[in-house]
Length: 176
Image 1 (cartoon, rainbow, N blue to C red):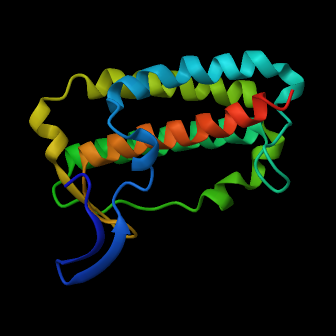
Image 2 (image 1 turned 60 degrees about the vertical axis):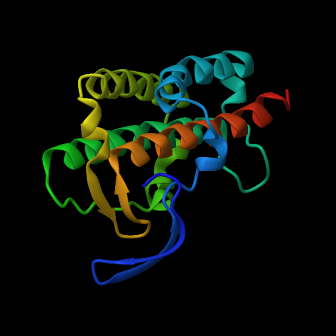
């Protein structure tokens, strides 16, 4: 179902969504290659800005780089759990999360530690994904806000999410 956009009806529900809100960032790139490259690219940005650059944001009211890394670490843990539920449970309905509430303590956390956590969790998630038979990626699940999705769509969402945040990081790094 990748590429489904707009209104959809089914299972007694009506949805109006883009299954992957980050599809425009991913384009035709291979999502697994994007997922594998992201930790290195993020580390390169962190090295360019240095410890003092972790407090910089791309605009007033936007998360600083350290908070973006904390968000990515949280998201990687949540995506990893979500993917495993999709594979392990028939008719899975995933639980959305409120990223702003999760972000309430990011200003008290280490961006460097968050980046390390993200990189380790990503390596583990990629290792796990690579063990799955190709047909597993078509396993369906329901996202209450986005509607019916597949594991493949979730992987594509993760990759687009990575690229979205990489663009934000590049803006921050360019402010030096």
